[in-house]
Structure formats: C-alpha cells, structure tokens
Length: 394
Image (cartoon, rainbow, N blue to C red; front, side, top):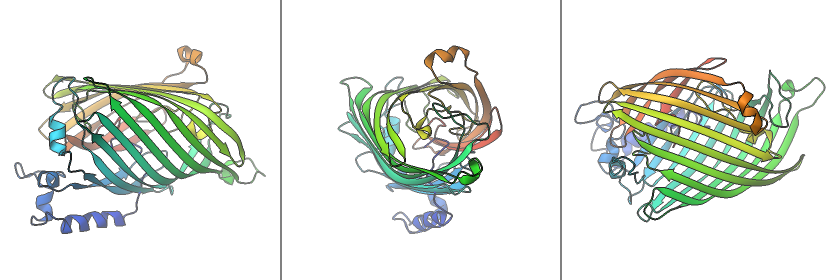
C-alpha cells in the first residue's frame, strides 16, 4: 500500500463510484460527512466505517512516479469477518511481539498520463491464529517505460521507450515456525507479456520491434516479521529473503532461464513517544539470461523506477518521523544505492544519493494508517510522491 509505484489505475469515474458507495452503504444512517469524521475530535478519518461494522474501505490512488507520469486510480478493500482490523493492530504493540495482520481482499485500478494502465485483484489471508499466511494476486497491465540498458543490454543515456503489456499471476504461501516470528514457504509468479519498442526510440530505418515472452518463476521464501503495524510501523523488524528460479520462452526471442535473489530488511525504533526511526536495506541479485525488464534496479525516492538497472542492485535508506500532534507528523529521509554487473564491482561502484522530507496525516487511527506527501531530491530531478501507509511498502 505504501509503495510509491502502484501501477494499477482507473480513470476519474472511479471517484464517482466511491461517492456512490459512501452514500448507499449499509451504514448510511449517518451522513457522508459523519462517515469520514472522527466523533471524538471531529477531524477527517477515513476509517470510521471499520468501527461501525462496515468491512469495505474505499482507497483513492494518486500516482506521481516519474517513470510512468501522473495518474489517478482507486480501489476497494474488504476486511474479512474473521479478523477485526482494530484488534489486529492493537495486538502487536509490544516490542518484538509482532502483530496478527488482518485478512483482506481488494481490487485496484489506475491510469497515468503516459497511457500506462493496470488493474489487479488480490487477497491476503492470515489463517489458523496467524500460523499460515497466504498472498494471491492476478491482474493485467500496459506500462510505458524507458530502458537505459544494463546486464547484457547496451547502455544508452537517452533510453529506449517501450511498452510492457501482459497479465500477471502471483501466489505465495507461508508457514510460521512454532513459537517464533519466522515464516518459511514458497512463491510462484507467472507473467505473460508483449514488449514493444517504439520506432521513434530506435535507430533510423529500424521498424518497431516486439518481443513476446512468458516467465514462470518458482522458489523458496523465508520471512521474519515482528512489526507492530502492517500499515505504518513504529517498532519491530521485517526480513524477506527469496530465491526465484525462472524459466520462459519467447516467440521472437531466445529462451529465458534466470534466477533472482532478493533480500529486504526493515527495522523500526520508537526512540521516544513521538519519534520513530526506520532503516531499510534492499538488494536484488540476478544470474542467467535475465530479460531487460526483470533486471534489478535502484529503488529509492527521488529516482524513477527502473532508471538504473543492471545485474545486481542494492539500496539503503533512513527515515525519521516526528509526531507533532495526535494526527500530524513530519518525516525526513535520505538514502543511497548503486548497480553493478558483478558482485566484485560493488567496492568501486558510484553511489546514487537521494534525500527529502514530507508530511503525514493519521487518516485511519483505528488501523494506524498514515497518508502524506514527500518531496525527494535525486541525482537528476526533484520528485513528489503521495504516500498511503509507509513509503517502503508492506
């Protein structure tokens, strides 16, 4: 939820659907204003429905990711009756105790001004007293991006415009190790795509170039999760390690057999009652015949997604949040990352530095969910991001 690139868009009519839902929902004995106002302080609160038995939560999406342009979208979350969102959040308030995340389903759609669009449905389930966690998603997308090379592809400073269109299936099943916050399981991904390079980006005389490919990935996943909140953590640790082996083929390309190993580490400290410090470390390492669109990239606020790609990539970022009032907070962040062709090159790689600041508003106190705006300065530009939840994702 908190990720700055959520390529799932729908057009402006989605907002009309949200309004219709609010005006005709089962809890409409209240006015629409009552449903988005906290009865205790009268301030804006999107989560009032969850405290009155309503299980649906409309979610607006505003995309400012420079890789795909400005966009609008929206979605609808459904919290299942076997997990009360407020109880799930409140269970994890002890240091290293973890939390039982709520089971929820959702549909999302979005569209941007560079004609990128996507739609996806997903389900996250926490089953059997949170001893089993399932994540499943399926969707379609047409994403317009620019490739600057990396891996076995030649580098280009201007980039080549291309369209990535297809459908995706994601399945993950995790089992908790007894009496711990550790999970082990497996992941399956399948992506059937058509990659089209636009003729204007190619050399003169070269016609439009298309690559049809499919990629099936299977591999083990190990996780550790002691976060006190799934949406905006204040304390705890989250680790995700995966190695996914891909096999695929393309009608107009050679077969793809490659491997992606990913490591994600997040740590949060509540240094005082009003001050939270977070640290994220992310690394992706590929081998084999990795297609250009699957190459690891530097993932930092201030750098367009997939701008810097190569065989391996690492990035790290610090973020500090200061609560000014019960609702309003400010954040400051800074990070660095790099990409290399071989592991031995990390010692001499040129670091890409970013930094910025932002504001947060506690939109749904019952879920501990913040939303806000970040301004990030990268090596090439100043970028604005609208955040829902924490900026590092779930």
